[in-house]
Image (tube, rainbow, N blue to C red; front, top):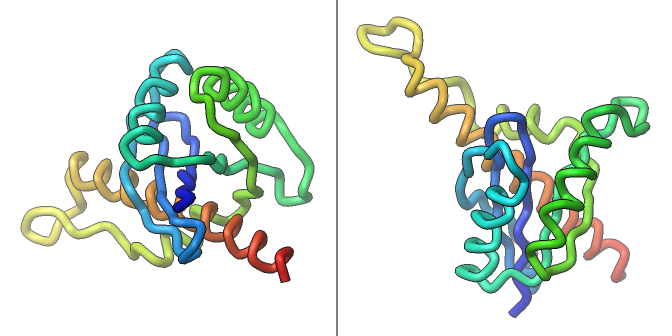
Length: 152
């Protein structure tokens, strides 16, 4: 069984999703804190690769709305190159435009805080982490759907 990990790379967190290529359904898995060094991120991702027997990683590539690669896409490619050297599994990129928007629609708004007030910092952080996981699932599902479409 071939498993894939999907990653939504952010400045503070990395959303992670998992899918079995055979059933073609991506599911949110976890959210990792983003480390200062790619090597530390690679160690955490390598642990997930081993634990879930993943054979490939799909990383969301933040293209500009025009479809061109800007500063953020270049930074993502550089991070992925540094991480890929340490993982030993193929790494591919998938256009991630609007994935966070779709994820926010799926997850819904953050829960209210105590007494109906604004959410606490902990609640906001948990909500953002959940959106990051869901965005990774959107990215991975887009890749699986594209592969299924090209196989027909």
